Image 1: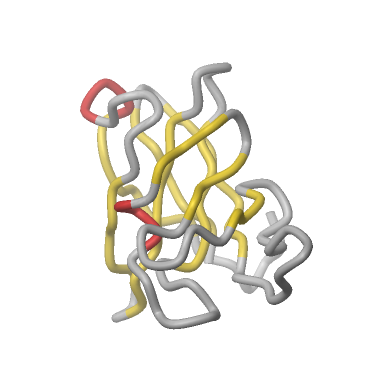
Image 2 (image 1 turned 180 degrees about the vertical axis):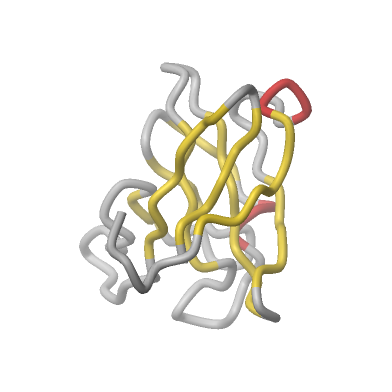
Length: 105
């Protein structure tokens, strides 16, 4: 972790259901948090770049979330909107420490 980055404790991993998004707010910014079926935890900016849809409410499939407003497919790993659409959301590093999910900002 870089010296100027901050690790913020968010939630117990056991309270984050797999394949269901959860919106959290860090420094006033919405972040969509996901516990994937493979056990990984991913975090991305909470709003779709197209129309501001709440990504935590989207449908999760493997390493992607589908925006609930217009079905844009977004990578939970890279933050990139998949073709034929375009755009990108910020991704955040996550860590699980002592059973708690942390986001690095």
